[in-house]
Length: 64
Image (cartoon, one colour):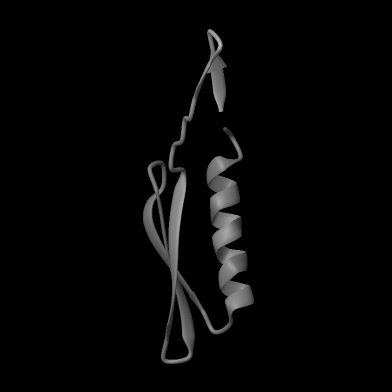
């Protein structure tokens, strides 16, 4: 929340959106951001998939 002149205003900006899917015993993630566009990841287990997504997002925003 940002306060100006005694008033408060909600400011939200969507930075990253991702969806996770399970298909044929394999996990898929679709990650979308304004800077990086749409990209997809896949892995046999959820831990590996989340690791890929976290690394990708971290690298994208490390210079902000």
